[in-house]
Amino acid sequence: MSVYLVAILGNFKAGGERLVLDSSGQLPEGVESGDGCCHPQIYQRSDLAGCPCCATTLRLELESLDIDLAAQAQDFLQTGQLPPPAAAPPQLLVNARILTMDASLPEADAMLIGAGRIVWVGASDRLPEDVDSGVERIDCRGRTLLPGFVEPHMHLAPIAALRGHENIGPFRYDTVDDALKRLKELTDPTTPHTWITARQFDPSLQEGPGVLTAAMLDDVSEVQPIFVYNASLHFGYCNSKALAIAGITSETPDPPGSGFGRTANGTPNGVLKGGAAMAMVARHNSALRETNLIDACLDVFRHANEVGFTTVCDQGTGSMQGAKELALLQALRDSNQMTARYRYSLINTLAARWDETDVAFGQGDEWLRAAGWKIVSDGSNQGLTGLQREPFLNDDSTGIAYIEPQALNAAVAHRLRQGWPVVVHANGDLAIDRVLGAFEAARAEGLDPAAQRCRIEHCSILHDEQVARIAELGLSPSFLIGHVYYWGKAFRDEVFGEAKASLLDRTAACEAQGIRWTLHSDEPVTEMDPLRCIQNAVTRAMWKAPGEVLADDERISVEAALRSMTIDAAWQCHSDHEIGSLEVGKFADFVVLSADPRAVAETEIGGIDVLETWVGGNRVYTQS
Ligand SMILES: [Zn+2]
Ligand SMILES: [Zn+2]
Image (tube, rainbow, N blue to C red; front, side, top):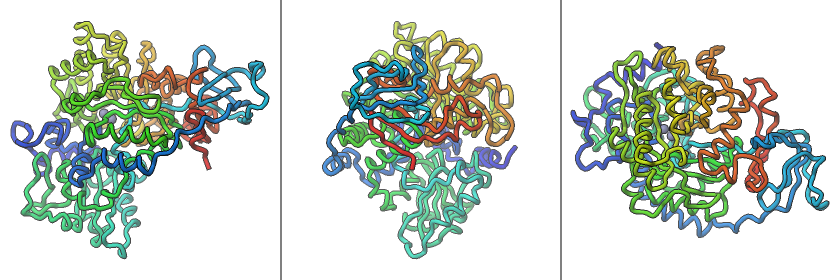
């Protein structure tokens, strides 16, 4: 077993590292369900590699800093509102290699756009006769045009809130040592009051110790306060200076539903477990108070454009400030500054708060729309909290249910009845059994999950009979394909063994059954990058096992992968009537690539450059 997994399992097993809330696993009195996390047991297990879908850390921090998103949104609109963008004059793109993702006309070489939409697309020798000679012609010089990519599952709020935090995660630094060296580079002894903040520390993928302690971070700086988030956002780490500023000593009791890592004599060791403990430290960082979240969201959209996305869909709206986030989203829309379209699913843990509002499925417009109701049913497989039929390979546990079957069934049926497309996170095979059971029960009550395009998110481990049930129910899975690339070797060698690991992300099995499926990043879990996702699905290569492939027979064609990140993702987000393919009447949302993904080596797809990104007929990104 590799060093990093030993580190994680070590943390699970060392009693001193666990935060047991009480012997029944119940939340302490006074802590609202959903305030700590989806399920209190996550802290008992010290889920160091969990999914941030349900991390409410940032909510507690904003609350302790007294930041009101609705108020911030109002302030922003007073200074940041622009007039609606003027519709660009008609433009004719010629000499292009256009992959339309429209089955009735898969390829074309010219496209006419006007008033933000596609007016005509086809072969240039069949241009409509009435094309005005005054139309601006753009010579694409043989470059490839595709519909703008659609990210069906990401988390806007945490990405935006942590925009100013240095990414010291595994996709940039292989080892904890290298990550700490990067932090050292950021220090400046002449600015002792400036916090050094970082995110994405991930002991499941970075070689070295399983936690960062105050002693380790004191080696980076004893002068400046330091705060680092674990990639799961369920844990934080700080140095002695930060502990001192926060006034945390051996006398400080653990906050409810949360806790401090401690040395043998009870002194806090810099490890912060859970939202409340993290908030007690982070609230002293004045830079957080000055962060403008709306600006940060716009910045996330600009970044999405750089990698080729024109639409992104959030799968956990409300986890920071409940309904106040809707005010923030509306301010984003009203600012007329959005460069990507946005769809969102409401998080079920705040169901009672949503029920006090009038939010409903489909509310909004082409820029901003409510698209789903999100339920989290279990943890993550890499964190050993995904709910399994059988125990993990090197651990006798079977994971954690974040919602019990009865409550799951009730929530699925209730929200379907209200008209919501229901989107359920399920990683382990037992979690998926339960989700399938919930949809079957709903159908038995006369509801129609297929018509409402219900989804299973991550849908990581799938047995053949589960694939058949998904097909039969008309459900649609979305796969976190980075699981294969980044964690594939750990799943195979340490978490599941080869037989079960080969059931991971079964794109080809779903394709063969005619199931509509998509790929996603779940950023911040992995970075948003459609071409990287496509390459991961096509090759099924594993980062930590060069030259090896996980379940060769689950590889799919480049065409299928492209479809999954364009028209099928648009369909999952209930937006295929307006985006996802280059067809007359749809919005002129497209990307210009340096190469045709079908024409390069499979291992080169992720390296294709996004040269331009267009949204609604306006060029929102040009590679410099
Ligand atoms: Zn999730
Ligand atoms: Zn997620």
